Amino acid sequence: MKIGFEGRRVIVTGAAHGFGRAIALAFGALGAKVHAFDVLADGLAETVAQSGGTCTSAVVDVGNRDAVQAAVAPLGPVDILVNNAGGVCGQTGRPIEEISAADWQTIFDVNLSGAFFMTQAVAPGMKARKQGRVINISSGAGKTISLTGIQAYAAAKAGQISLTRQLAHELGPWGITVNCIAPGFVLSNPTTERQYAAMGKDGQDRLLQNIALRRLGTPADIANAVLFFASDYAAWITGEALSVDGGK
Ligand SMILES: NC(=O)c1ccc[n+]([C@@H]2O[C@H](COP(=O)([O-])OP(=O)(O)OC[C@H]3O[C@@H](n4cnc5c(N)ncnc54)[C@H](O)[C@@H]3O)[C@@H](O)[C@H]2O)c1
Image (cartoon, rainbow, N blue to C red):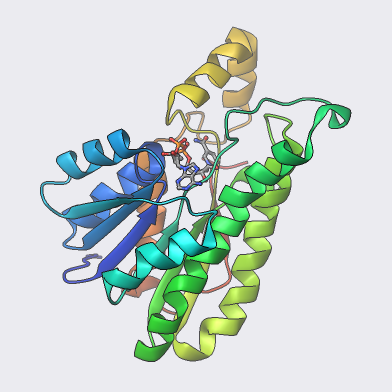
């Protein structure tokens, strides 16, 4: 099996760090022209520097519909969109009584509204060309419960899975596939490193014992699944939510 993306135009959101950077670099290495979006200019600059010229970048808040429209419009045709921007926005698990409206909304803005606004921005061009791939990065938290205990995160990630299914049906007649990846816990950034450290030795052992393959994943494990959904080998797969978690 040989996967290539020569001449394909890709947007990866949340590409300043972690999975997003790994995904952007993986597409670039396989011939794609990648546009990396994030709110963090420094991290984006590092992604671009590591890409060897395959990647350009823009500072975009994906939760802001007007900003998304303004950033996507000048790019021209987009073949593949990866909605990876997301996370817990610096929050930790707290009892429901302590969650403010802003705490709740912030997590929805990036994880769910961001995926919606970005797809809304690229869909007209994909429909006109009768082709396109959208890949949403959800989480195991959207299929079961969140290890962090953050209610909005679990709900927004479940929302991404439902949005994936709905948009697959809406956009399928134009040859556009919409799929979703639900990663397990991966050490991808300082936040996840801290979460892992906070589990202590016993918690870490329990986590590993609950993974069939007995190891944590890597950003490359997630990027590989994205490349598959974006490739010709996944041409008749849409509306799926694939767990990439070492087996549960
Ligand atoms: N790491 C894990 O264990 C894990 C597990 C399951 C799912 N995920 C999901 O994978 C995705 C990537 O996670 P990661 O671990 O690489 O995290 P990360 O924090 O390293 O990367 C997320 C990126 O999204 C960017 N971002 C945040 N808000 C944004 C906004 N409004 N607009 C644009 N960009 C924004 C951040 O600046 C960051 O660069 C997230 O959606 C996360 O929820 C991660």
